[in-house]
Amino acid sequence: MPEPLAVVFVHGTRTSSGIWDSQRSALAAAGLDSLAIDLPGHGTDVTSRFTLDSAFARLDQAFASFSPQTPILLVGLSLGGYIALAYAAQRHPARLAGVLAAGCAAETSDKPLRAYRDVASAIDRAGKRIGPHLRQVRRSLRRPTAPDRLPSTAPARLPSTAPARLPATAPARLPSTAPARLPATAPARLPATAPGRLPATAPRPDWQVVTDMLTALAGTSAIDSLRAVDCPVWLVNGQHCHLRFELRRFMRARPDAQAVTIAGAGHDVNTDAPRAFNTVMLGVAAQLSAKPVAEATAAETVAKAPVAEATAAETVTKAPVAEATAAETGSLDRARERDANHD
Image (tube, rainbow, N blue to C red; front, side, top):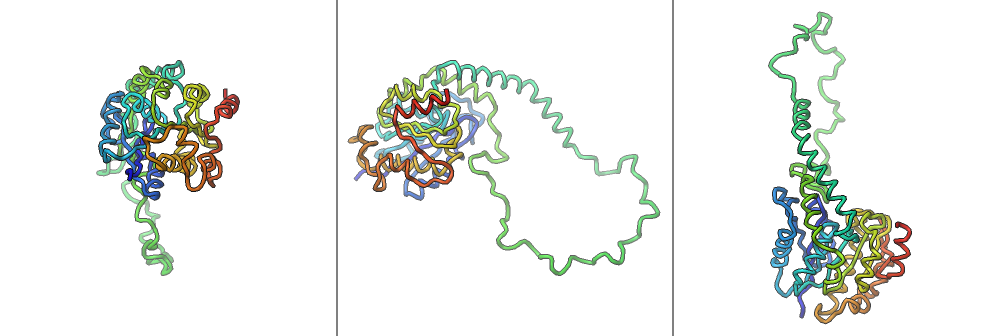
């Protein structure tokens, strides 16, 4: 009997593994194990410099944390999607069951991302020049007035017209109707961390990590990686994602890939429309778990695997989703027609 599928998540630039909390909860509810990594320069490791090799090393560690027989679905968003494709293409892990790459349907070696790298580098240099001055201004604004004495302009004593004591009408204590304490249902404190965000006390990655990331990706081709991946691939994008403008080109490079566009969502599709994204992700996991991975081609996995008594297309198009619907599943013609409206 084959091992149950596990899922490894890779986050995007200047975020952390926390963006996948909703997805990991959905997988746990479905009885599937998962792991979300922090890339170098992010999350719990903001002091490290990002390189492609160091990112691959994190994924090697993540894969090694599961049983050698466990098939793994690799899910990545934005930078994480590019890393997932490159890792699958270059390392070819034997137990990689599939790749779900979200928000990364634009070529990494083309001019738009090179221009983004140049802008990020300029922002990083400017930040390093003016950052110390801004911190000094913030410190001076926060500096409190010395408590050991009043300012010299303060009166030596209260004016003689001040009442010696509170008026007789002042209540001696709070009204008896005032609650002695907060209701038992009141939360003791706010959550320590908002979903998908770093804790307030955690240092946020600076723009150096963006420059490092784009420099690392400039030596790769997402389309070449897509062609070289030897397992099923899903390209998932929000309808308004700014990195889906080359989806048609990606689909031409890999006709058996499945394209899913989630209506109303933006680039951060898993947090913009978590229920819709989770529906797609769980459908993919169910398809890959339906038969031994080694026996399934990409086409068979999509076309034949039963998913909760529905086909892959039905799972995506009929699932009730409050935030958005996922209405497209791998039709190249429909992808072309859809993207023509955004070109």
